[in-house]
Length: 246
Image (cartoon, rainbow, N blue to C red; front, side, top):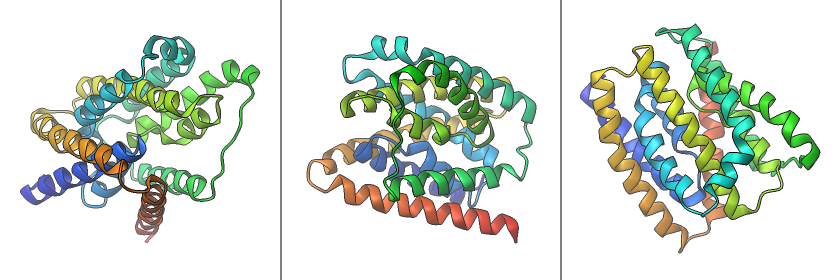
């Protein structure tokens, strides 16, 4: 990575932190979507390791329902973490070119669901049998592109969870995902010294952006900003898809 790449990555982390502070999610998705346009996907996944841990620990700790959420979501969390690890083991240091197409599809599907306000509803009886399946699929996606957005996000939003608890639930699940991602990156040599240093430095703009985002949320329409972010992710996904097919 050049100095220009590092400065760009840190700027993206600041922006992504603001988005996470505003809408409660989006830091790894936005960071990978933007930095992968100029950096190899393996580099961008390594850079998000530490910032995602710190920001998700913060989000997971606020709400007072941490252990209740862990007891409810462990059938999702455990297979997600295990499959993520073995997916990264299977891929190794060389991320395949088609992983960018997976990233593009993830961005387009996620943003389209949000823009069209498509929200599924899962009956309580289906939660237990569905959780491991969602965990496995999300683990494969996270192992390939670093973010388990699809199908994890639509699944959690489809459960009978109050909005405040949903934010903490996202924090708990994504915190566990971030920890396993970091362990996998270290185990397979993807998070080496230089990447670890930049990732550690990136914690500062990510936390600062998250703090700014929470302050802005009190003054601006979160819904309008959410729509703008979704459009940005959609266009980034389409651009990524088109650039890989040319």
